[in-house]
Each structure stands twice: as structure tokens, then as C-alpha cells.
Image 1 (cartoon, rainbow over the protein chains, first blue to last red):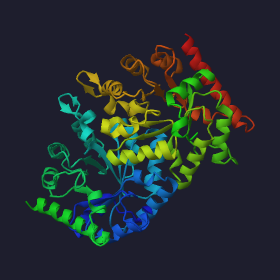
Image 2 (cartoon, each protein chain N blue to C red):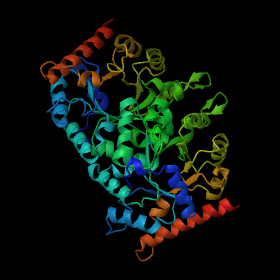
Image 3 (tube, rainbow over the protein chains, first blue to last red):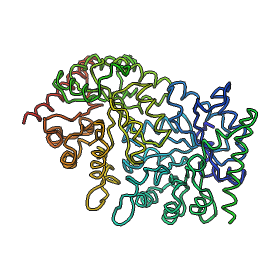
Image 4 (cartoon, rainbow over the protein chains, first blue to last red):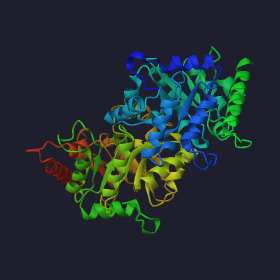
Length: 274
Length: 274
């Protein structure tokens, strides 16, 4: 899915087309864990098999670069191969949560957008706008900024009260300001639907990446209804372990993952229909 | 410098010993930029040559992992070799600014502390305490949390007023709370001495990594005096490009880098003596 500039389709276009084609707002995380991969299956075969089994029921894939770093050099080559293997018409969002300054941010943007060639990335906003600029100027890619994350300690900083409002709301307002090129999204944990609803009020048009469904136990219906945009779309509901490592019978792990993905897709669609 | 647990010296011990031995609070950043490396010199030879030329005038080295990612697999192998090449008695602080949750944070901690084997790392606190926990529980290593960064846009979030005080001060208070094992440090830009002074008042005992000297034009004397601890130490003043790419005569780049490092070390010591 590495593309030349002349043939580039933006993340937003790819995402909407895949969501429509597959009738799905499910994003599947690709976080290989050697301890959980079925015995006798290589990490490569497992990841490629997951893509084969699910690429027509998802709106995007989200590999987290951390899981390709433990064995470092080789892991990153596998990530590159995986990204190339994903069909061109399914967008790839790299979960990297990067945030650095000046020429360092430029180096990350080159590595992520050019060397790996993904359509979108997650970024940490703590260092401010200039740290995001090398990503924001790539108008065909989308930068998802951490806003209200899905973890138990998310509130330690994100809920601090700034002039009467929690910090994550201020980040949402900044994201609107920084969305000059229509290429900003937000990371909004599915585990915190009240916060998601408030962020949707502030940012009616931004796409939300919503982790926390499945292994993290977010309630899908409540989260989806809190976060949908005016068109009943605009969210990427992410499940990683719940799909990847779905309990399989007779070693048929790809079938099990597909069924888990279909179930989640259908649950999301049921919530949209209500 | 990869170590087994039984022979581990903590970052704090290594840092203090190197600072004393070399009479230096200068940390040299190792950020290879192919466009700036002298013609005919390989990146590897350049980095190894810099270490040879400066390891007795620094208190630590700080490679930024971003500069080893553009060519990905090979870059990371070079980083690993560089870390192994740095003398055991000079601590290595990896500038990675990571921040992720749960099992993802665990994967980063393994990659950084075990696979790469560094003594310390920079982390982004935006995701809260649980995101830092896999690093904090490694009591022999130190986690430097981004507090007030050196870039122009640092204030976009970091200066937001939380109950009458800027967010970075709140992060400083949290860092004290999270310092149960004596292994938390802070990233405090040398470009903002007034903020550094305030953070030192809040955190009298934490080590500060201070980027922004040299290429980023921070005034060394003012920054050092603002940030020194009660013992006249406790800071790692970082210069990267100003040392690495110091103008050289007759191609003697290693000599030029050493002279630049000595000059900075002496300027820092002059400020300490005042």
C-alpha cells in the first residue's frame, strides 16, 4: 500500500470508502504477542492470515509499532511487510503515539509516512503544535491526537481542570484549530462514553479512533452512540486482542478471528441503527 | 553496556560518578543526520568517533531513537551497536518520548531497557501513571518525564492554567509523587530558565535533562543557575548538533567536536562556580 504522491488517496477517502464497502466501522488492531500466537504458526503467517480473514469486514487496520520493536530490526521489517500486504483499499493507521520537536518530529514523519507508508498515525499533543506540524502538513494523511485515552490512569493529566473544563476538552478545541487541512482526528477511549459524547459536541467533524472495546471491556453500544457523527459514522472502533486471539476450535484461529470481527462489526452497526 | 541484573549500577550512580570523574554536566546528543556527516565518513564511524573523542568530557550520552528509524531495521541495529560501544561507565539516556498503555507500555519497556539496554529513557506523561508503571518499576533505570519542553510551541498545552498554576508545574508535583523508587527525572528545556527555576523549587531532588543548548540557542549560564540542585549538580545539559556538527578545519571533525564539548562543559562549570 505504499503509494506515490500522484496516485494518493487520502486517509479520509479510503476510510469512508472501506466503511461503506464493508459496512463496517470496526478497526482491527494488529499487535503480535508471541505468547498468544497459535503454536506452530509464525508471527508473519499469523498476521497475514488475520488480514486475509478480515479485510472485507473492517474499515481500517491499526498495527501498534511497539509490538514490532521488541526484537527491533526484524520486527520492523515484518511491520513493513505487513503494511505492504494489507490491501490498498483498506487504510492503515499506525499506532505510534509519537511526539517530538523540530527536526526530530520531521524524522518521525519521514519514517512513518514515507518509509513505512501508512495512511494515518497516532500522536501525543503534549509538546504543542510545532511538534505536530511535520505530520499536519501531509494533507493526504491523518494525524489522530491523543485526547481522552482508554486506560485507567487517563485522567491523571487529561482530567485536570483548565479554566473550568478538563484538559482533554481543551485538546479537542485545539484539534479543531489545528485541523486547517482536514486531516486531524482524535483518540477517544471507548471506555469513557460520557467523555466521548462531550468531545463529539466540541468536534462534530473529526474522526475518532476509539480503542478499548473487547479486551478492555468497553460497552460497544454506549460508546458508539456517544461518539457517532451527524452522518452516523466518523468513528473507528478498535479491537485488538478480542479479534486476534479469539478462542478457536480445532486450531481454526483465522475462522475464529473472522467470527469475532463480524460479531463486533454487527454490534457496532446495531448501535448505529438505534 | 548491556548488563546483567547482578552487576547493575543504577542510572543515578553512573551519572553521578561520570559527572564527578569528568567534571562535567554536559550530555551529548547522538542524532545522526546523513546530510551533515562529513563526506566519506560512514554514519557508524562518525558516531563511534564522536564517542571516542568525547567520552571523558561528558556525564552521559543521549541518542534520539527517531534518527535511527528513517531507514528502520538497519538504523536500529546501528543504535544497538552504538549503545554497546559507549563505555560502561558513561550512562546512556535514550530519547524516545514514549507513552502508551498497559501491555503496550510493557512492550516498549522491554524493547528499551532489555533489548537496547539503556540506563534511562524519556517518557511522555500525558497518559497518566499506569502508562509509566512498566518503566517506574525498573528501579535501576531512570524515567525522565517531559515537563516543560524546549520547543517554541511547548506552552500550547504545558502552560495551560490548572487551578492557578501552569500544567507543567502540576506534572512536576506528580513526578514527585511518582518518585517512590528514586528513579524519576524531568525534561526541562534550557530555553525556558524561569520555568526551570520554578520546577527546581517544586522538585529539589529530581535530575533534570535540559535540552536546548547550542543549536536551540539557550543561554547556558542562566539555564544552569536556574536549575542546579542544592549540591550544585543534578542536571544533564544536553547539546546535540552544536557538538556533533561543530565546524571543523581540514576535516578534523572529531577534534572539532571535542573542542565544542570542552567549551560547553567549561561554560557549564563556570556557571556552577558563580
